[in-house]
Amino acid sequence: MRNSADGSSSPNSITSLASSQHHIFPTLLRLADYSLSRLYFQQMSSGGGKPWTKHATILEEKAFIAILRAADRLEREVAEMLKQYSLTPTQYNALRILRGGGPEGLPCSHIGDRMISRDPDITRLLDRLKRRGLISRRRDQNDRRIIKTFITPAGLELLGRMDRPVEQFHLRAFRDVNKRDLRGLIGVLEKLPAPPRAGSQ
Image (cartoon, rainbow, N blue to C red; front, side, top):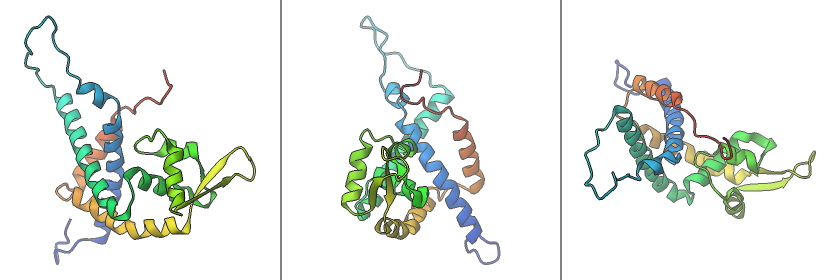
């Protein structure tokens, strides 16, 4: 996106594009984490010792593979970028969720529900962040049974330093895709059915 007058980037265009990319990236990762990805790569033989037959790929299958490949590449690239801050993608995701939760904090279960990639041990994940002084935990004043988690000033400072580099990462990741196509991609991905919740029928 360039201004016709001087070829410079429009601030509004950059803001809009970065916002679109923040929307697409979690959606791609959720799709990659869905159990169908594991089922797909388990090829089934025709049985009886018969040789494999060539499979005619349908358009939906091509789209499925393209999404998985894109999500895998983006996840590896963002993991490499986060290493300089000594964070994993799931730790960074948890910190952003807690920043969005505000000064009221969030219960552990709420953090787990909002995670892009499900962590089987969210408590251990939060313990690591607590040891670094990035979060704190205390019992809710109104319900002592509930333990809430809060992002600390150190956690907010770290995210503040990361915001611009992360935005630049998103801009680079989608540098060859225009805003119209990005909006179309978001619209398509949002039409896909969400993975079933754990324990649902």
